[in-house]
Length: 524
Image (cartoon, rainbow, N blue to C red):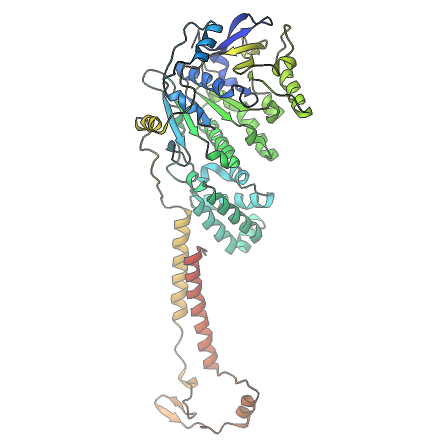
């Protein structure tokens, strides 16, 4: 529900449990980012759905990940349930009704939504290094690979492109090291092994074309509502690093592609980053600095970022300081670390003299939260203990038939469902390697014909030269030949040595070409 450019979140309660006042999120400050935290089962997903519905009705597109499948229900009309009706009455929500929202389903694997892809070039070496947990030396090799590809007009689109580039670098390591710095073949090999693991985890689905267009997650309907893009992430979560890296890439793309708009009346897009702790866990300092930079500056592009996680301590302080709108569900405080988390969460709110945040956080019920949003000139409001409003869409997942029906009328239907493999680094380097191998093979087979003066003798020892036959020594070898025979070693004639050398060269060239064809080892 919208009221004067604000999203209705719920109604606050006084310490005596009496209803106090409605709580809103002002759209003017929605791009100042936010945080939704709370233990499992406390209502974070429903709060996310309520916010997504509010933004959609305000004409703001939304992108969110569906970790458990529950969010898919926002595409269906809500259903009457006793506890929803009771909550609406308890908070005085007299305008509560059910609604179906415009949803676009996405899926990295193309099973529960439209395929979503990017290319290695768009991902870049920094995020790719994070994806494979690369060392400093390996990250340096990846940076050089992208540099060579950029300068050489070799598009890096999918994993086989990067494998081809790494093969080339390994075979020309000495030459490349002279220009770009030392390249270790061991580092190249380690990266190739990590890429193989990545491929087995399904990353080939992510790195291909057609790549996702940012504009397709920023759509609005003809009636002015914002589309809710829901990424099916239940399977993707089996590889947490791939999940976090993909969402960070999408956030970075928004930052790089969208124009500056200052402080609009409402966001151009709201981005929900569920399971946000996966983004920061074990991340190198340079990556956390990148996230901080994006979060700090992307609001001027009209994008609001909302991190969803269990514990506010999952988010670094430098990023936490950028999140002005807070929704804190219940936390447990059984261990010293959990007690510290409760205190940290309580200290982030503007105090309310009516209660202690640290005490209330551990006693909040399901669907209840401490809320503080930006108001007035952008200052945080006094924290309030709030009963979250019931959502208008369905709570719970769609079945397969319902999901297919939504996808069949999707505005991006047939745009991303088929792979497209254009010429890129792999094809270009393969052609160059084949041409080089063919040229080398031809040059080696054009061996000079034997010199008649060095023609081999027949079995009787005779040598034929220019049609004349010179007598040989038959079976009566010279003393020198007898000595060689006794020693078990017979010297080759110059002609024999030359012919054997030529044969070895041809065999090596042909063998190398065959091995390259089987193993994909490329040579310039």
